[in-house]
Image (cartoon, rainbow, N blue to C red; front, side, top):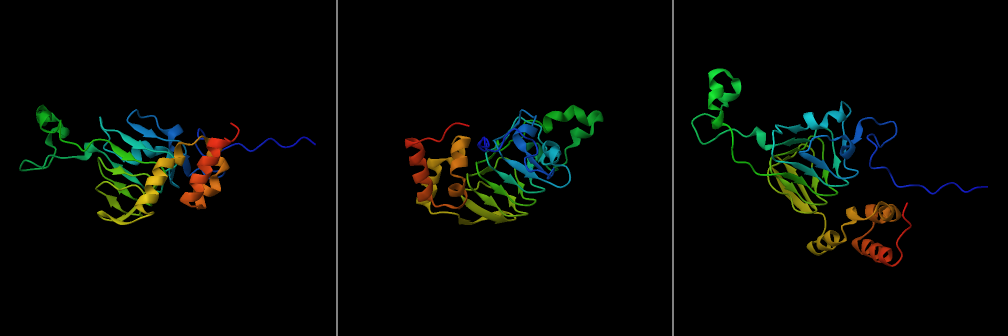
Length: 226
């Protein structure tokens, strides 16, 4: 008998990666905006219309600030990113954006342009954003971080930090500082897919020592490219 062909790694170009679950979409093949970037295998889960992510989940995105999402991120239903376009003037007597209402008020558009922003919003690799979490403009969320459901993230989140609440506060770090440094150096999310596949169990349930041994083994005897 002819042996079956070897199993291939998952395909990062498939829009709906989970068979029978149209509620899950990979973001990289979905996104069309030049102001949004998502890494391989980062997904959004929504039973309503996950394919509307760019318009329903990324709000007030009038540019030029970008939303950058790393690889292997999990975004729960209702996650929202508020971009800098949501800003109003706060240095005058009123915060109301009169010029957007048109008419003769539109002549004063300079009053609402060029407002100070916080820059790009950046989500690292291997980040889990829980159900209906909200990320405010210019926030940077570190690699391996977890954001609890319904949290409002108003400030940067450290690598492998767990945050929760409104405003979100650091609950704890997932690993020691030393182990976090080791994990960042290993950067498994940048490994070739065959190597990730070969050491999937270690990545999901092993220790940092196990992951270092896997990396050393790969340097000595890399898995075949498939």
